[in-house]
Amino acid sequence: MLQSLAGSRCVRVIDRNRSAWYFAFLLASYLLYLVFGALIFSSVELPYEDLMRKELAEVKRTFLRENQCLSEEQLEVFLERVLEASNYGVSILNNASGNWNWDFMSSLFFASTVLSTTGYGHTVPLSDGGKTFCILYSIIGIPFTLLLFTAVVQRIIVHVSRRPVLFIHLRWGFPKHIVAIIHAFLLGLLTVSCFFLIPAAVFTDLEGDWNFLESFYFCFISLSTIGLGDYVPGEGYNQRFRELYKLGITCYLILGLLAMLVTLETFCELQELKTFRKLFYVKRSKDEDQESIMEHDQLAFSSISDQVASLKDERKLSEPFVALQPVVNYSSEGSINNEQ
Image 1 (cartoon, one colour):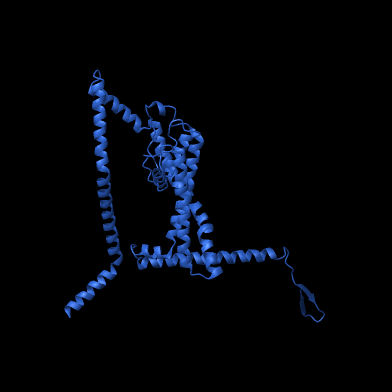
Image 2: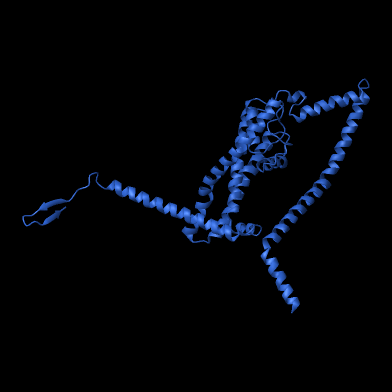
């Protein structure tokens, strides 16, 4: 008897705090996913890093052996300065000296990566004034970009997702949630084709030293706003139509981000995902529910009063400008007759 009571009490406690348990499970899963990623990256990349370090050490020893007039300390100072300049996007190589990082098109490309939070990191402000302006520009520009993207996505998704799903549902009578799922997957396939596969093939052709995997990797890293900066197009030696190429990449980033947001919003509107997300949310308290009901009632009352006021205004407009007064006739018998 006691065991059954204790068991039922535990079930009630677990059921009452179900969202908290789901959230704890979600948090633990995320931490495990981080650890899993760190282990995989470390096991895959560490041997390549060790090999590159050994190759660089051998190149350094060979260079010092062939140039005995140069000390190791002098070479270290030179390499340190070269690497510092490279981190700021300035290369000492002859084949890169013709590419300026801060002409207008390159600056436009940099501004787009900043506002879209892609941030490749291959080009960064050099002066203190540039760093200060970048901070101020981002403080205003990033929320401005989010506001613009939200407004654009809200308008696009009506014509791309909601109306087609509703039309198919009403026209042929298919279940709406099934139509929404199929439409979301078709839209995702179209987005992957138009903004990942096709651009990857284009970048493979335009960037001579990129293969298809590297080009696809660049597209994914860019449109997911990760922006590692290890692959940046338009930085090759004697790049043809470099300014036009930079402008095209800027347009590609903006349109690609909008397409990604539309696709993600379409998936987020699926009823199955909404139900899944609610598992991890905190349930509203009674006070919050009452407040939302009161706000809804106030909005409904205000909308009704606005409609009534507009109807009154329409009636006033339909009435004549001069009101006709009743005509009073006095009869000889002393009675009063009203005539319209």
